[in-house]
Image 1: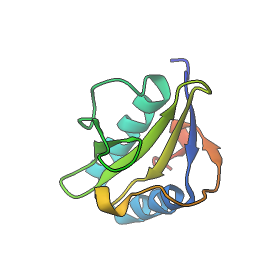
Image 2 (image 1 turned 45 degrees about the horizontal axis):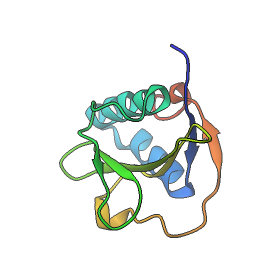
Image 3 (image 1 turned 45 degrees about the vertical axis):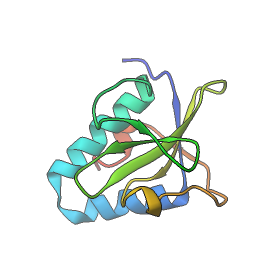
Image 4 (image 1 turned 90 degrees about the vertical axis):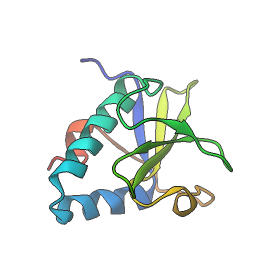
Length: 112
């Protein structure tokens, strides 16, 4: 399937990818892979991960598991999805700091 949106990862999100790779939690890794693929294809899709708007800042979150969320924002004009974090809950994921801009494809995110 064609990639419609470019993924941009904050440095914290990249650190979270490494955490999940080392965690051994296959269920969480599979859920992250599904969410990342959907974010590339259509970030406005309602599944997986029960997307919801963040309350105190712009952006959205999707559920990985009971404790962890992927938080992100969408730049519709540039066709980009900016991923802030892939671990923790809402209060842990406020994107109020500079980021390291790195582009990856879904196939290179968590699966490896």
